[in-house]
Each structure stands twice: as structure tokens, then as C-alpha cells.
Length: 164
Image 1 (cartoon, one colour):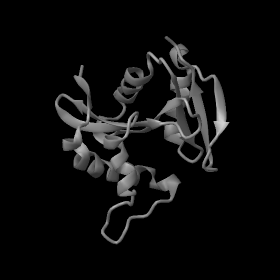
Image 2 (cartoon, one colour):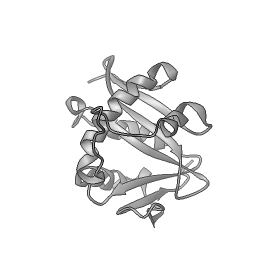
Image 3 (cartoon, helix red, strand yellow):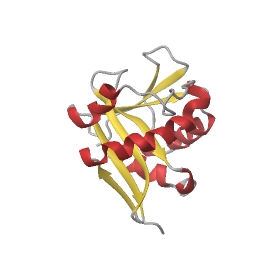
């Protein structure tokens, strides 16, 4: 069995996550419609990205498997609920997929919730929707309510209640 590590990403990982974020954008571009800029990178506002290292309740995490970089998780305050956190972005690199790593990461962050959390699923992302449908079928990840996306996108915000 592979050794999974989920590590808080200090500022020394900012460029690493930015670079991996490009792969994430590539994967999600089929439904979010983002195009690459003239420099070949997907655009994300640098100020927005920097918040993961500057603001309270915002955090970035590196995911490693057997010491190799395997992905990242980005957490931030929910846009849909004032008193909730959101697992905003979870990315597992292609070669590490289908090993149950994403489920382990979700269990790590959401297994013992002392506050509400939200997960946003996009209607045009069938793989992500199937993953979250499976997760929401587990007793510890039962959804208490579903809300429309506050930004008006074709997405659903799933609210997970406090469980500890």
C-alpha cells in the first residue's frame, strides 16, 4: 500500500502548486471553458491565488505518495455560507488516480467536522460528480442541504453538517 502524506503547503510550495494548478485547469477546461493565455498558462488571478498563503481560513496542501508529488488540496471560506469552509479544489495527478487517494484526502479534511463544509459540483463534470455522489453516499458524508451556486454557474453546492 502506498504511503499518503497530506502536508500544509508553506510559501515554498506556492510555485509548485501554481504549476500543478495548470494541469488541474487542463483537466477541468472541458467544462469550465477556460483557455490558455498567450504565454501558454491558464489564467488565475495572482491576488486570488495568493490568498491561500495570506488569509485566515485559507490554506493550501500538498499531497504526496511515497514521497512523490501527487496533487494538492485548496481550502477556503465558502462563498455559499458565511460560517462554512469549502474544499475548493482537489487535484490528484493522473498517474495516481484510481487508488482511492482522493477519498483518503476527503476523509482527512472532512471526516471530523467541527463546522459546516461545502462542496461544489459542476453539472458538466461527470467524473467529479460521480466521485462526490459516491462520497455523499457514505454515512459520514451525508449532505444536509443542497444550494444553488452563488455565482450562478451550472453547479450545486452540497452542505455537510457538523459531525463531531
